[in-house]
Image (cartoon, rainbow, N blue to C red; front, side):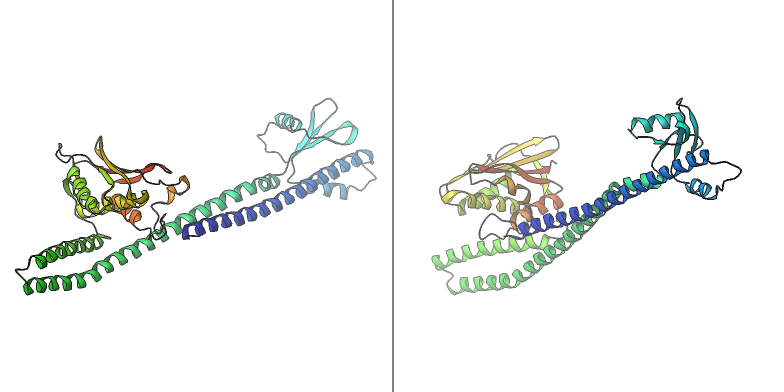
Length: 381
C-alpha cells in the first residue's frame, strides 16, 4: 500500500470519526429539545389548569397566591386564549407588532391540538425562543464544524505544500551541487585520456562520447540548480524544441518505437520558455510513454494547436494507459504506476510548467490498453 493510499484511508477514518461526533452531538441536542418541548407543554397545561381553577373559585374568600405565581412565572412561552366563538380572549409573551390572529392560524395549521381551559376556552402556544434556537443548534453546529474542518484542511494543506516545496528545492540544489564535483573530475580525466593517445582514433571516439555524456550531466545539474529559482524565459520556436527532444530520445528508444512528430521546417511558433527545463518535461513524458509500451513497440506522437494566445502541445502514446481511479494522482510526488518508479518526473514536470512557465499540464485523455495524451499549454509570444 503506497503513501497516497494510506493517506486516503486516513481521510476516510477521520471523516467517519467526525460523522460519529456530529451524530452524537445532534442526537443529544434532539433529546434535549424533545425534553424541553415536553416541559413547555406541561407548563402550558398547568397554566390552563390554573386559569380553570381561578374561574371556579370565589374571588373574595380564596387564596390565589399559588395561582398567580404559576401564571406569572411563564415569561417565555407564547400563549393565545381562544373563546368558543373563535375570538381571541388574550395572549402573553408575543411582541407588540405581531399579528396575533395570523399567529393563531399558523399554530392551527401546524396541527397542534389545543389545551382545554375554563368555560370552553382553548389554549394554543408556540415554542419558546430558547427552544427554537436549540432546534437550530445542530445545523449551526454542523456548519461551524464543517467550517473549522475546511479551514484546518486548507491550512495544513498549504503548510504541507510549503514543506514539500522546501524539501524539493533543497534536494534539487544539493543534487546540483553534488554533481558538480564529479563532473569536474571526469572532465579532467577526459583531457588526460586524450593527451595520452592524441592520434588514436578509438581513443578520440571514446573521448567524444564521454564529452557528450559529460555535457548531458552538466545539463542535468543545470536543470536541478534552476529548481526553486526564477528561470530565465526566452522566446523559442516550439517546433525546434520538439525536434531537439525527438532527436535525443529516438536515438535512445527501442528500434521499434515510432516517433510521429511535426516537421520542424514550418512557420515558427514562438513561446517564452526555459529550454533546459522544457526539454526536461518533454523527456519525462516521453520516457514514461516508452515505459508504458509493451516490449518497446508503439508510437509516440506530438501535435501543436494554437488557440488564441496559447500554444498547446499534445504528447500521445499507444501504451498501457492510466486507470481512471489514478488520473487525479499522477502529478502527486511519490506516485508511480511503475514498480521501480520514484514518482518524481510528472511532479517536476507540473512544477516546471505551472509555476515557472505560468502554463498548464494535464492528462487530456487516457484509456487503459490504448494510450494516454498529455496536454501542455504555454503562452504564445
